[in-house]
Amino acid sequence: TGASVALSKVDQAVEFNASLPYKHPLNDKLTGTVGYQHKEVDDLVNTFEADTVYASIARNIYHDSGWNRTYSLRYRGDKLTVDPEKYSTDSLPYPFNNYASDYTRAGGTGMYTFGKDNKQQVIGRLDLGYLYSGDFYDVPYRSRFFAGGDSSIRGYNTDSLGPTYGGENFLVGGDALAVGSAEYNYEFRPSFRGAVFTDFGNAYDTTGEYDNTTAVS
Image 1 (tube, rainbow, N blue to C red):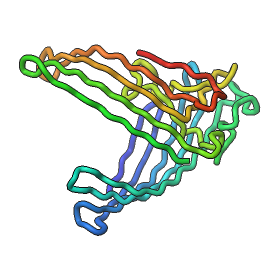
Image 2: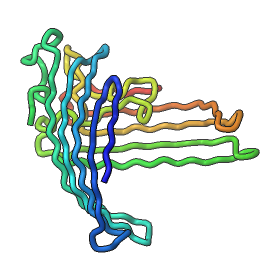
Image 3: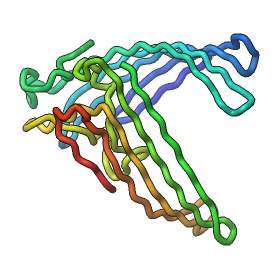
């Protein structure tokens, strides 16, 4: 059992989790999680608050071959509140008035160290995702894909990139994600490295309803 708390200017969250062995004391376990998240966004693009309650139960099976298998069931409830002085809710797209899907996501990171005393490194990263839904407009706002942030596209605020809605220029999120990164770094002193990198990609709308742009940093 355990608990975690996250506090920042944008995100506040608390989560409780517990796990216990199932059919094998080490290689088969059940895990349960319940949590709450509050997100506040106030930047040049959007101003809104999002409250999320979520819960999940999963069975994790570990194999000696190195392949792992997970079965899970999740619940997530989102409520989005926009600033009524800045936006008219009637003019915003359906996702922002929906308080009510499954998605596939894969990613990988590779690192190669070389040179004298292994001081040089090359790092590559790729993060892909696609959301399957009978009706994309019914997908809760916080379940959609966004990009931006130190683990996505650096130089942009967290979750500040993605398809936008018309003249309001309001982020609506995408049903697809493609983000990549290439980096070279050098260790000048122990535990001190300088790096040159480029990040690219975005969250995209494959329905063609919203505006897509690829970001590069």
